[in-house]
Length: 376
Image: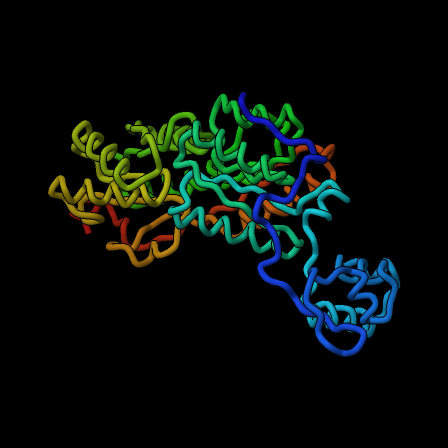
């Protein structure tokens, strides 16, 4: 691997980095003085307290120093008035942490991923962390360059949402002991903590819903073959059909996009013209499936029902509104961020996996199979 992580002692001020403008602080004669940005000592002098007291308050450690609320509020008011800003570079040199977390997603334009990012960001910001977001376009080569860039700015840990089988970048992160938590996609390694959708339960809910509507000719539009969610959902799809004495067909998309959903569904409809239902591995693939159904001169849900997965925003406004498996994106992101913060604080803690509970949301893209409709 070409990835390199700089030593913690190598943090320096980038060229051109600095405060945007001179700030003014009161001088001894009451006049404003312009020059260097205000320091902890300036705040302490103005507030009439010791420097260590200011440090505890502005680093949210007032309780440990038994600092009164009045003193806390006075220090914060003085810091705001003087325009004091904590020096993140100095803090990194002192603590060995930058309070920066990197987050790698497959597609920043995916609304489902946006919900996860928001959930993670809310937790990180509440704990004083900044979030750097990178999109790989679901390309493993891009993942390497994005991770390298994040480690180059000394990110304390990574939220990694692009895991694949035999993922060389992920293996390197583990070998280097870098705090990392997987989200949305898992890995075979048990050394890595993860927060994932319960793919198997969600898929079972979707297939059983279609079976309850009388569908017997069901196909599955899966994601990339080397992604854990694809493996889990396809396996459960086949398992539930087998329990019902049925067999289905499936195809793999190269990416989780509408275009790929259209391509795979078109191929499956040609292979299985008797198809009455499609289960897609995510909502964007489902949208492409609906386009393919219409292109084939059929309608959804009258001729072919469609079920998605994830319940991305605005799914209820599609035409028809999309039946899907709901995963709380905000909760998944917040759980992943909390787990990463715990891992950063205690790198030796055992890895753990959390599953986000799915819920079937029935809307207008599913209906009874035509064979059942004729008997109604």
